Image (cartoon, rainbow, N blue to C red; front, side, top):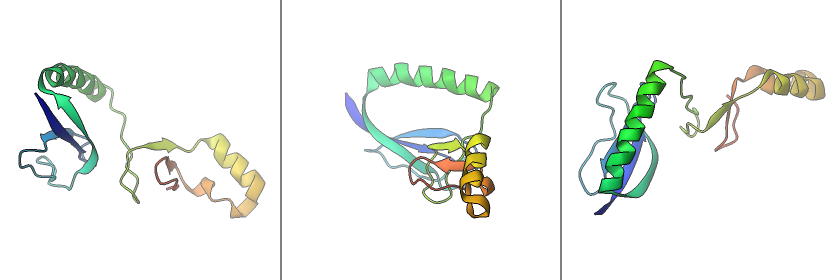
Length: 116
């Protein structure tokens, strides 16, 4: 049996929730009471879904044991971000001098190409 699954992540507690799009659901995090970010939809088979959910829960538990924060872009709310390296900041400052902007920012959004 296939159904459409919506995935949402809370930007405050980094908890990920899955919902069946055929059923009614809320996009407010039950733990933090914050609007969650849509991270995609897909079509899944319910039997395959159970196996993937078990694997996901196992990886999630490992991630909780070694927490690395998910940085959310303040402009587009994407979690597809990367840290701006010190080397990149030095090169930007060397080329543009005091007009270089990367030295003031710490993260880069790979989706909307903004620095923050």
